[in-house]
Image (cartoon, rainbow, N blue to C red; front, top):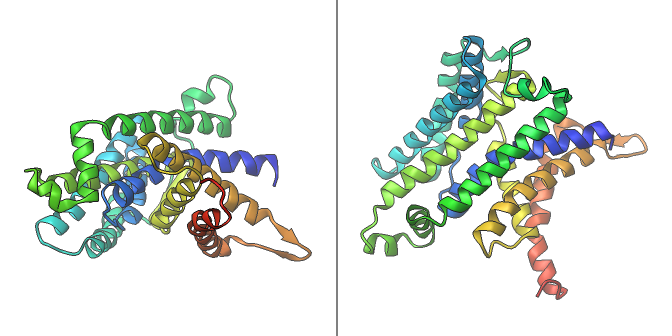
Length: 296
């Protein structure tokens, strides 16, 4: 693996840790299998790209992306809580509808951002290379998001949200509205994923309607890898594990794509297979560790 590929993996690992934290919020904290994130990610990228091309400040464009993602998440929550549609199906319906919304917003399948100022421009103006600027910004964003989630999960609302994921009947018996918790959790998750989409669009230099394919798989892979390395006995370890898992996942992908034996080497088309192998290894690791007596 070249130094450039290594830095790229670190950059993407930190950047997409925001998306992984969003997936963690629903799949782990709320126990809500939300597939609408595959649509929220390109939705955030599309909204951010259109705002920038219209002259909006890049930071405000990212905020607009987050609002759009939260709206998509609220649609999923509404379908599930009010219309009583299965959570998996509600997420799929929102994801499918999002692609049509994205095409309406951009007016085309792909929207380039070359030549426009981005959120990385102020850091680059200090003399940092574009890749280094992206790493600095993504690292700060991941750290701030992690600190906010750790604080939030220790608030009354955060505890109620976690309790909803653990035992919904018990939460209802305490007089807490589980529908409200689902709305808050799913909306916040999709908003965070959309923010990641907006940042990714500025980093990559374009927004594409298909850039969200596999988002939920990559997010779950990061969460599972993090849990395999750091047990989720506390909120701090769980959140830190997600960020660490995101970086390791991207490093593993970069290493696999650079791996070569003779004339054989992996291609970008093998990405889904590589992801499946990583997830299987991460899921199997805790059981294998217990069998050999490590980490008891």
